[in-house]
Image (tube, rainbow, N blue to C red):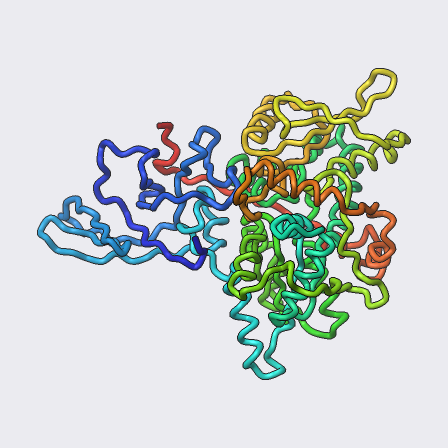
Length: 511
């Protein structure tokens, strides 16, 4: 399945009485859409909490249909090549126009992101990266783009498992592969995650201290998962947005770093850089396409293109290359004097470790308590766990992890009833978190659980660092951001969210 495919989407001029949402083709916003399994996270296949999760109902951008008076209902004919024709009662046949959908369309409507084949995602695929690289080969030097690729640690773990390599070896060999294609610089998004963790820590402390004056300050909900963010904006809107952390995800912080700090270091403008990220889930394509991360001055996005771990594998296969056979090269560093460490991560699990870092920081900052070991208590399932800080029998902090739609739904219901006991929740759309993202490599010859176990083992084997102890991060707070409390911190490390008004359509019917 490729994102470049277009589907013909047409209005159901006569809806059969026997149709229902479980049929092979679904009607959505008055249009007929083919059913396909979605690459996006489960929460993005939903509109309301009682919608079916799978097969999903599809969401499309409506196209204008001219209605002529006096015409009775027509029928839709679907040819073998997938073309749609409107057949009038008098026998007349008219080919129906395609409705193209971009990511911006998806983010602007009140429905849900659905299957990759139904949604034409422009400028968000490995084919687009190839296009830019090929254009660089024939363009004049002044017109060539500086191509930068930033790779997530989750994607590197997935590729390492595929080729039975350590993450460090897979990382260095992946660098060689991209450099061979014509990429100029390769960065690790782990460096950007330092900023995301530090800002999240401080934001939580600030919210905790003002909770009496501002009831919507807690619980603070994690903001690194775009699938969760998109779902929250569309489904819960103004109720939930005040609770969501304003800190950008590592992807968007590396976007700011590349298009601002790194661009200035290289004496180029943001529009002269083509920035690609390699991510474990398709939802990151949606995040990169948000208008909040678009420069009106230079007419470019902080992240121009997002490709998944699976798309990197397809690129390797297209080039006839095995990652295992390549010679290693180190990742690049934004600081010439500081070599990049490609075997470095953060403690706290495969989704970034937000809960653990914020928990330890808050315990020390708010209560003067050092937390060395964190004990998780599994609640309804392994994807819903909590951590408690107690003193003299009193609960000081109660944090939780809520992964996957079912747990997110339960959390939302508790919050709406005022029954949530948590101060912070690490929310992720995918069950088991980012290491199990929809863009990761799929199991072949083994169960999905066995593959995920291997990926987790590789990821957890990486060395961990403490963000506060990274000297390069501290220097950037001064050089690039003008201090930790500056306007630039808000500009480059924080964002905002937008409630999406629901449309009144037949989709709201409870079947």
